[in-house]
Image 1: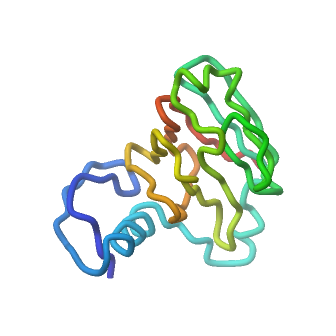
Image 2: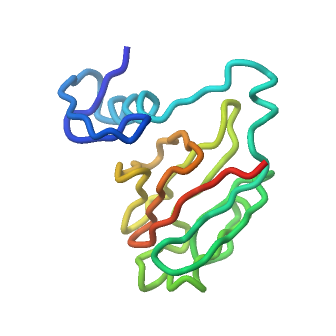
Length: 158
């Protein structure tokens, strides 16, 4: 059973829905909302091996496409990071768009990729849903990501 946060959200398929079920702590409800809304777990080893090994970020706010190798965690921000590879958004007016030095991180988990906010000042969003630190949220192909005011789409490349 999914315990969903009260308010507006987007389920898989991007259809706006209104929820009112309230159970567990606030952090548990947020986590469960994310898992119910975006959780797509590969069910077999063959599906797991088909998971993309590279990202392509299409940056909408300013014209640009950035490709990243997904072998290691990717930190989104504007300053070198000890957490993994850096997707440096400085050339895309990061300061003006409210991107923190270490804004968010994308990791490969057992069942796919996750996004975690690193206590950024201006927030991290997946499909208009605010990501709360330190929870990890599953990512899907073509998810819309917003870091501060910079919007992009994540595309998985095989």
